[in-house]
Image (cartoon, rainbow, N blue to C red; front, side, top):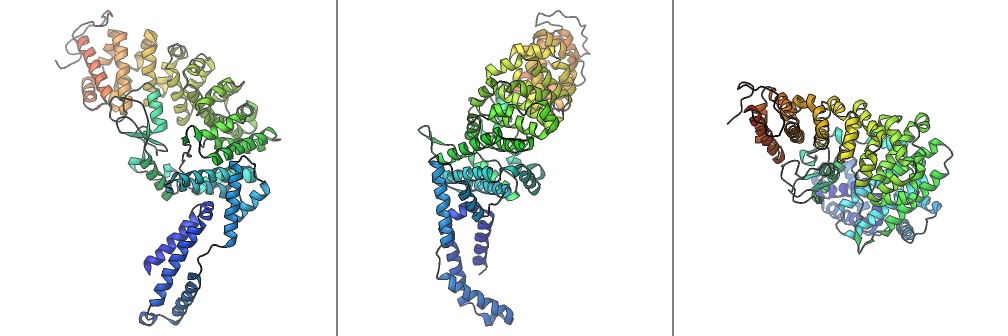
Length: 590
C-alpha cells in the first residue's frame, strides 16, 4: 500500500511541477500511468481486511469511499476529449510554424489560457521546465520536439505577454535561489573561476573546466592545463555531457536557474529542428518590428530587454536577432541622454550587443555597423551605471577575439583609456571585465606601446592587490612585448611580484615567475638586485620549483639561475654590472 501511494504521489508531483505542454503531449502515457496505479490501489483495497485494523467508523467509511472511486476509475483509462483536442491544436500550431506560417495570435492566446500559461512569469517557468525536460529525454526526436516547444513558448510569451517580462523576471529571481546562496559541490565548480560550471568541457589532459573560463585562458596565450600544468597537445574542448547533466539535476533540486544550450545539431549541414529555428526567427522579427515603432523609452526598454534575453539563449537566436536588424536599433539606446533618463534601457541595450557579439559572425556586424563601436566605447567611458560600463568592457573583450578587430580596437586611444579608467575606479566585477579586455588587447605589440603610454604599469600597481591573477597576467604580456620601457616601469613591482610567488594562486605564481624572468634577464643587475634584496626569496623560489605548475617550475628554475649568476658576479645578459655583491647578500645553493 505504501509503495503504491508513493508511486501515485510521485506521478502527481511530476505532472504538477513539470512542463504543462510536455504533459499534454504525453497525455496518453500519463493517463495509462494513472490508470495502472489506480488499478493497483483498487486491488489492494479489495483485499484489505478492514476489521483487523481496528479503524474508527469514520476512517472505515473513507476507505470504502476510496475503494468505490478506484473501482469506477479502474474501468476507464481513456483521455479526456478536451485534452486530446488541445494536444492536437498545440501540435498543429507547431507544424504551422515549421512551415513558416505565423500563428494566429487569438488562437494562440486561447491555447495558452487553456494550458494555464496566462502571463510572462508562467511562460518563463514553462520554458525552464521544458529546458529541464531536455535532460530527461534519451532519444533525439523527443529532444528536438522539446526544443521546438521552447521556441513556441518563447514566441508566444513575447507576442502575448512581452511587456511585463522584466518585472516578472525580477519576481522570479526573488523566488529562486542563486548558485552563490547554495553550497555548490566542489566537483561542480570550475577550477579557474571557482563558480558553478554552466558548460563543462574537458581539455586534452582530461581535466574539466567551464567553457568560458578555459577559453579565456587559452586565448590569453597559455598552452598548459591550469590545474596540472601539463602542456596541452591540442586545444580542442570536449563537452562533458555527463557532468553537465549531473549539474542540471542538482540545480533543479536546489531550484537554481541553469542555462541549457538548445539542441542545434545538424544533419548534412541542415538544421533538423526547423520548428525551433522558425519560432526563433518569428520571435526576433516580432521584437524588431515592435522596437522600431516604440513610442516611449519604457516601451522600448521592455522590448530591448526581451532581445537581451533572446540573444543570450543560443547561437541560432543570436544569428536570428542580428539578421532581423537589431544592431542599428540598439545603437539608439547607448547615448548619454538615454542613460540619464532611463539607465536601465542603456544597460539592456549594451548587454544585448554583448550577447550578440558572442557569435563570431556578429562581431563583424557590430564592428561594421555605423555608430555601434563608438556607442559601446562611450558607454564604457561615461555610462550611467557600473553595470553598463562593465558590460561595454566585456563587449570590447568579445570583439577583440578576432585578430583584425583586436588591432583596430588597440589603435583607439578612447578604448585604452576607458578600459584603464574602469580598471582603476570601477567595482571589482567591472575591474575584472576591463582587465580581461586589456589582456586580450595586450596580445598585439603595437597596442602594448599605447598601453604603456597610457600608464598601464601604474594602473596594475593600483589593482594588483584586488585582482592579482588578472593584473600579473597583463604585466607578463606587457613586459614580454613592451621592451626596455616596460621593464623600467615594472621596477617598482618587483618585490610585489616576489610576494605573489609565495601567496598567489597557481596561475598568479606562474605569471609572476615568468614576468620576473623577463625583467631580470633584460633589465640588468639593478633589477636582479632589487629581487635579491627581498628576504626569503631563495626559499620562495625553491617552493615554487617543488609545488608550482609545470611552466611555473621551469620559470622558477630560470629565475634561480639568473640569481646564481648575479650572486657570482657574472653578467650573462650583456648588461653592465653596477651593483657590488657580497657573499651575504644572497645565499644560493651550489
